[in-house]
Length: 173
Image (cartoon, rainbow, N blue to C red; front, side):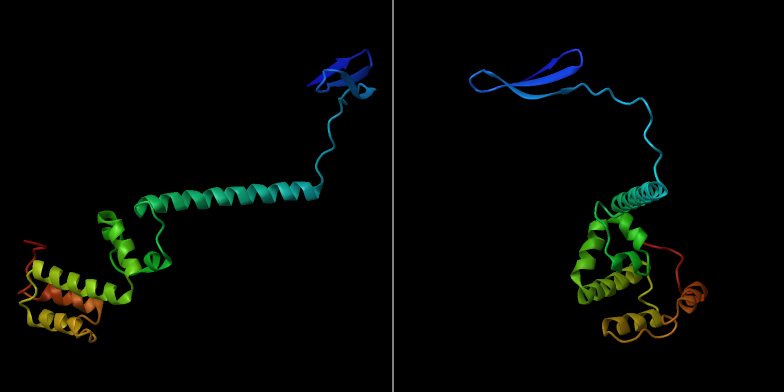
């Protein structure tokens, strides 16, 4: 235990040893703090403070973006591959983000098999499998061959779908 005794201009710090005997630890003049302000920061100190402030702001902004992205992706940050994949990722992300993370981790062969299955299922649901040019494309897809026209070009594919009178305007059963 330490005791502080203050005299008029002297300060004495006593420490009680384990035998409760006072032992003088330090004696000195009382120092009165200066009332003058500290010197202004140097240009180098100001530059360092500004650098730290910019770094803290950038870090906070990055963390805010990551928090937003985590919420969008079901609590997990997406891989770079998921961030850059073409297609309707946002539609699937809103439906089942865990499925997208699982597909991302599954690897290319599984991803391709799921894409083939989803394409066939979508064409069946839309009533397109009876059209010869769609059936031909689904066969090429199943055999891992390049897609035939008009499926080799997005604009031509959408034009063919819009202009073929046999294509129904429904999107499901």
